[in-house]
Amino acid sequence: MNFDDTPEQARLRAEVRQFLAAHHDELAHGDGAYLEEPGHERVDELRRTQAVLFDAGYMGLTWPEEYGGGGGTNAQQAVINEELHRARVAGPVGHVGLGMCGPTILRHGSEDQKQRYIRRLLRADDMWCQLFSEPGGGSDLAALRTKATRHDDGWHVQGQKVWTTLAQHCRFGILLARTNPEAARHRGLTMFVIDMEAPGVTVRPLRQMNGHHSFNEVFLDDVVIADSERLGDVDDGWRVALTTLMNERMAVGGGGGELGVRSDVLVSHANRLLPRLSEERRVLAVEALGRVLVESLAARYSGYRLQTTLEKGEHPGPESSAGKLTAVRVAHATADLGLRLLGEDAVLARSRDGDWRWASAAASTPGIALAGGTDEILRNIVGERVLGLPPDRPRTPAAATATPIAESR
Ligand SMILES: Cc1cc2nc3c(=O)[nH]c(=O)nc-3n(C[C@H](O)[C@H](O)[C@H](O)COP(=O)(O)OP(=O)(O)OC[C@H]3O[C@@H](n4cnc5c(N)ncnc54)[C@H](O)[C@@H]3O)c2cc1C
Image (cartoon, rainbow, N blue to C red; front, side, top):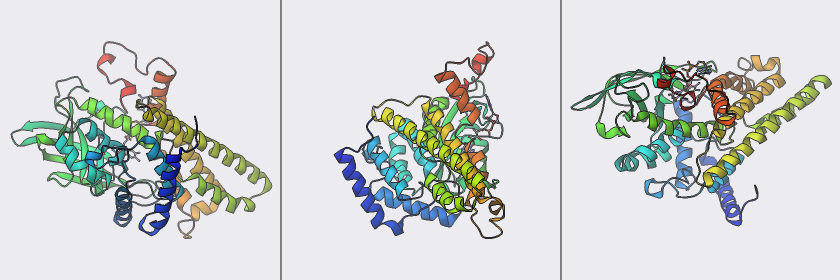
């Protein structure tokens, strides 16, 4: 693999670098994901940032031009992403729309849905959420119970979703619901676009242990959805959901990006604090830092491999699951080391107006290990599909109707 830019990529890189410097003050910056409360003010700032980048042609570069995308290549988007990272531009706030909902609409939506939704989604004019998980169905998604029943005026939806990221800011969501209770559990599901401002939708905040309100419970009480807002065929929602889940795995860490605090932030943190440590603790800390940076590089290079697969027009396989596992481990080790370097100051940071980021990051990483497929589920996928180990569930007649684990989250 050649990591050098082609002349065309070098030109693009220089152009993006120049743009980001010239528009520095219009863009939101940050030290990594999950470090700030996604309150209205910050979310508005991040939406403006996404709009500036879209207008410059840097969002959705690989998406079809007729819906607002750039019609470009994965390699070009990778160059842009690297430059955004280098300039410390905060990650896109519409990441659920970009990573999951948009690709699902592009693959399964009607022409009308693509025309109405995609451009606004890319620009974060509308924010999107993913309404899949329920109190009784997370990893085992096909166990979901939210029902949609057909009436003359459309589908009437009754049920509850949970862990819905940023739903409090979203105008639309993609919703998986049971439309045929008689069918085998993953055959009677249908996917819809839901208007989060429709009567009967109630969004209630869930507060996480990092203190933030990033996700929600969503109650659906006789919400009416027009049949034209269906995504794909009736009772074919599982196939549509697989598109979402495949894209989710690539979006959440599979692409070699950092999921937690940036590694360069950890390096400057270490440079500042290492001289204060005893010789013995310093040696241990430097060793730990080396390990984190090596893993972080390994994740980045695995991401390049995935980019190459996409560039060739092929579908990435289970390597996106392995990529997420590594990215979670890096996020966890980064937060852990940042916290250890601070020592007791980490615990007292909040009350002393100190460096709270590391405690916040450490409290966020367990959640990262669950979102977009838990570590255990991803290891099952790697075990079955990469290593060829026996399946998680015995293939008995009874298990034949159960969702194969590698196809659930
Ligand atoms: C930060 C965050 C954001 C999220 N955002 C969204 C969102 O926007 N939309 C949405 O729909 N959902 C979202 N989720 C939910 C997420 O998809 C689920 O938490 C995840 O799928 C796990 O489901 P669960 O919580 O029901 O846990 P369960 O499925 O009940 O799992 C509980 C434990 O059992 C383990 N386990 C389960 N099955 C197996 C198995 N077969 N083999 C081995 N171990 C197993 C799991 O690994 C886990 O440790 C989010 C979650 C988090 C933490």
